Length: 201
Image (cartoon, rainbow, N blue to C red; front, side, top):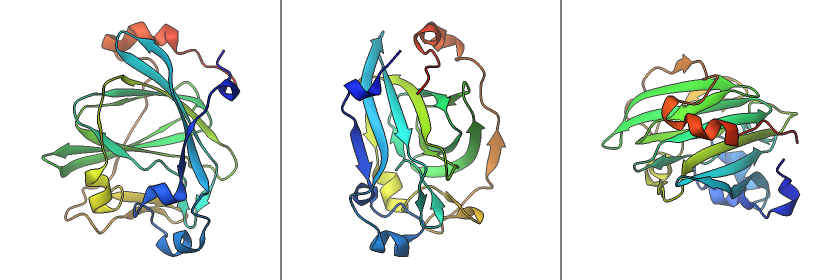
């Protein structure tokens, strides 16, 4: 059992999000110090992998549902597990920083999402009432790249009150596809599954 009250999270605030939000007029009026999500890093380690927990608050960013800023791993892959609430994982397959494919995976408690290397990814809390709790395993020495996300001002799609909305800062936006989550860890990471119990919050 992990007691998050014993740890100090890194807090992503509205001002940290830069230009990646859909409703920029709302962002101009909102409190820049508003906490959007909370990252508890390095709660466990196993064979070079680090276990984190992220809490994404049930907030509306104007017309858009709350989300992570998004990033791209230069080499590493990553595994997410939904602990509480519902999640939408938005994954962009990139080649030489060009968007080739984009898909969304909707997950609930116990579902697993695998993030392949060299992809940009974002997590959305599609609820206006319930906070989202996520765990993830990632290489402890992995490097995050935010440049492509900042340059394009977010993901290729925003999830809003009106549904999925294209980001016109991308030259080409492929059709959004939908995939189902995994029910267990990928084989090469099966040794981490027992290290990832579904705790209650």
